[in-house]
Amino acid sequence: MDVNSDIDAKGQNGQNRARILVVDDDEGIRESMRQAIRHAGYACWAAASGEEALRFLEEKHVDLVISDIRMPGLDGFELTEIVKKKYDTDVIIITGYGKDFQYEEAIEKGASEFILKPIRLQELVVRLNRVLRERALIAQRRQMEKRLRELTITDDLTKLYNMRHFYTQLQFEIDRALRYKSSLSLLLMDVDRFKQYNDTYGHLEGDQILIKLGEVIRECLRKSDTAYRYGGDEFIVVLPETRANEAGKVAERIRALFPAACSYRVPDGSINTTLSAGIVEYHPGEDLSEFVKRADQAMYKAKKQGGNRSLLA
Image (cartoon, rainbow, N blue to C red; front, side, top):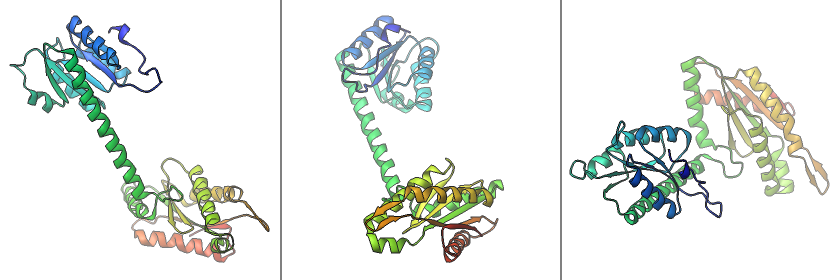
């Protein structure tokens, strides 16, 4: 590996630049391509074989591999197939044997571009610029699609999941609990006297309470747990592999943190908000709607007993 090519992948402004790896067993061609690519403003490394390139890729991420086809050991087509399978990296194939290899074959292996030798370095830079532009557009589209998916399952106010996603995810967790004979619990929580608070101080103040509650819930959950705004001032938490007594501890932790997080000073003093929570553990064979209904009944029973408490059903 040419250590002189191991340059910083940051531009003068500190902006990220594309990282490129040139793979060719001909040192002269390898060096001329590396220099041209560096001159075009990219971070560039070089490897003399497919095996050397794979060792390099295990240590560093690159955006684009430019590889010759005919090399001792692992050839360029084999390298391309491995790179496309294991890494988020594009490949440009180059060859001096245009009669033996076709563009269609290179694309079928996963390459983004196919260039014949002798290489005009200016053309190489134009081609790699095109591949990198397309790569950036694809990344932007994927990010946009991810964001759109998130918007369809996320509550705008609290940034927790919404009720639509809740039913999909709960069915998934029920199926998994049945398959692996594991436990599953639900918490259904409601802010005590929230309507009275809203009517007295306005919906903007009420929204702040819901936002804070969402933050408190997130702080109290494991990575495997999921939380949802179930509707209005009701929130629900799905706790996989959790028995009811452990779910009760989670509910009490949320209830303990909530009043301090949502204590507001108002013109006639201060308001300390509280929560009521219903806790249920899944009964094997139970219908999804019945499972949720039991949590809802437990929560309303807690409210009827004065609120500011959690009840296990």
